[in-house]
Each structure stands twice: as C-alpha cells, then as structure tokens.
Length: 193
Ligand SMILES: *[C@@H]1O[C@H](CO)[C@@H](O)[C@H](O)[C@H]1NC(C)=O
Ligand SMILES: *[C@@H]1O[C@H](CO)[C@@H](O)[C@H](O)[C@H]1NC(C)=O
Ligand SMILES: [Ca+2]
Ligand SMILES: [Ca+2]
Image (tube, rainbow, N blue to C red; front, side):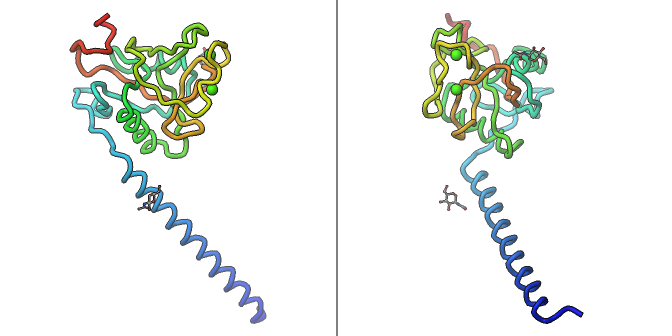
C-alpha cells in the first residue's frame, strides 16, 4: 500500500508537472501566434513549374533545408531554375519576407546563406546575381573579417534574427535560391551597366 504522504507527493508532482506543461504550451502557442502576426508570408510564385516558390519583390524564391557550403549551395540554386542564384536582398521589406519564409519552414534553425560574398579581401561585398550592393543589415560588430580571408560569405540569422554576418564559406547552411520573374531591365540589374 502507498502511504497517504506519498500520494500527496505524487499529487503535488502531478499538479506542478501539469502546471509547467500548461505554461510551456501557452508560451509555445503565444510564440507561434506572434510569429505569424509579425510576419507576412509572401504570395506564391505564379510561374508554371515553380508554384512552390514565393514571390519576393521581382524574384521567385525557395527555401532549401539542405545544409551545403556556400559554393555548393550556389551551384544547387543554378540547377534548380534557369538563371537562379543564392538570393540577393535590396530592401528591408524583402529581408523580412525571407525571414518569414525561413521561420515557416525551419523555425528551429533560421541560419541561411544569402548570395553575397566579399571580393578578394577588398572590404566590398557583391551579390552573386550581379545586382547592385544597395542595402545591408549587419549584426552589431559585423562584418568582422573584412580585409581578411577568414570569413568571405554572408549568412542571415546568426546572433541577431534578420541580420547578416560574414562567415567562413566552407560551413554548411540551409539557403534560399531566387530567380528573376521576368527579363525586364530595371535599376540594379547587371544588364543596365
Ligand atoms: C507578441 O510579442 C510582443 C513582444 O515581442 C508582445 O508584446 C505581445 O504581447 C505578443 N503578442 C502575443 C499575441 O503574444
Ligand atoms: C563544398 O562542398 C563541396 C561538395 O560537397 C565540396 O566538393 C567542396 O570541397 C566544398 N568546399 C568547401 C570550400 O568546403
Ligand atoms: Ca573576409
Ligand atoms: Ca563574422
């Protein structure tokens, strides 16, 4: 027979346990609600064969949960769609939309490669798709390896969510690919130069 004292302990354990459980569940639900509230998922891309891609500005993008080093990720993008590269970012609004996509598909690991790298320790960053470097949103203290070959590639969501960091290109990360919706010439495309 179990003594009444033990039953009391068991009961307490049960009550406290379930209390914690409820708190955790509430926190989880609130967190999720908030993520969807603060973040507007972009529309699907209306391009035949690419309807599981999303429209961000004038490109279609897709998240790949497949950790690859920067070079392998870029070549994987090129194989996914004609004219595709690792994604470039030119506006806060688009940066937010990319973050939203990552949150939706992989909330537990937000780190991704963007399509930017530092050209030969020049202190200058370039986009792989040839578009202008006209926007940046670095984590505080980053990029911390300009003018050295330690960290040449650009990732998002390391220490500060939605911000960028320069990191060694050999690390494997998930990534987002992008291709242009149409061939219309616009400022920021390499055809204008
Ligand atoms: C969402 O988060 C903010 C702070 O980031 C908080 O003030 C707000 O109450 C949260 N909303 C919900 C619905 O949990
Ligand atoms: C990147 O990954 C590819 C494919 O696994 C590999 O061949 C290559 O050596 C890697 N490059 C770096 C810099 O790690
Ligand atoms: Ca560097
Ligand atoms: Ca860095």
